[in-house]
Amino acid sequence: MLDSNSATLSAGFKWLVGLASLMIILGGLKIAEAVVVPMLLAIFIAIICAPPLAWMTSHRVPPWLAVMLLVLGLMVFSWVLMLFVGSAIDTFTLRLPIYQERLQDEVIKLLPNLERLGLPVTQEQLLNHFNPGSVMRLAGNALTNLGGLLTDLMLIIFVVIFLLMEATLLGDKLHKALPNAEHSMQQGGDFVRKVNKYLVIKTTVSVGTGFLVTLWLWILGVDFAPLWGLVAALMNFIPTVGSIIAAVPAVLLAIVQLGLPDAALVALGYIAVNLLMGNVLEPRYMGSGLGLSPLVVFLSLMVWGWMFGPAGMFLSIPLTMIAKIALEQSPSTRWVAIMLGN
Image (cartoon, rainbow, N blue to C red):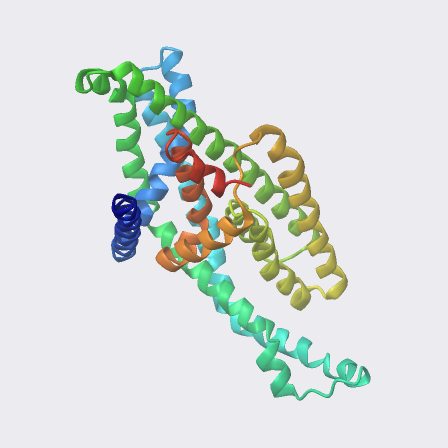
């Protein structure tokens, strides 16, 4: 009986120590946010670039040339992104007070309708409890943080260069460093392939989502259409709630700029694009086993958003998915991966 109690206490103590260690690690990551976020973004970009790098090297392109070609493409893309999106963020931030004032005027127009419904509400009460201008302010703060990340793009690309160069030498290093290299490389290769599959498909679907949203908003004449397309692409990494978060500021801007009928068309466009990309194309190519529980998605947004702000919200689901794929590789932790899944 004593041995049973001791075993129970020992197991409980291990869980307590593990939880405490996790809290310390998360706290350390939050403190090192300025270094960790660019590093994580660089790792994601390097993973996405790994398949084309492997394809070029398998077709007898020298590794250094393959890396340079990928880096050149990334630099052109980042330059275009900083040129167009950076200026759009600055212009939107300057116009933000005007948009907030117009939104408040639209809300005040609802007062007579509420009185006819038997809901006497003062202007102050309505603006305190339902003020879309505050949502626009939150969107402006998030876009400002996004602009800050754009300034780190060159640093991120430099890190990607070294990661890709290291990837071309990793196989030879593992053969020399590990006694059972084949088994270790087989396990690691399975993990990397699953991560590659998830990130490449998710990125492709997100880019398609951003392009379609940009095209639809441009047709309707909504200001800053490429900016809202970029936001839609980034938020597409967050299942379910991401598309809602991405649509809110664009719909509010459409109300101010074009009126309620066109704003309804904007919302319908977001719904149609996300139904097509998220419910038709993505499940077809992603397959089963690469989903997360809605509760896990919500908790991931809270934890990573607390740690890294808006960048953490974007990184939350890819990080959690990579952790889930890693847990699936070991029989002793596979049950945790099952609990995280949908």
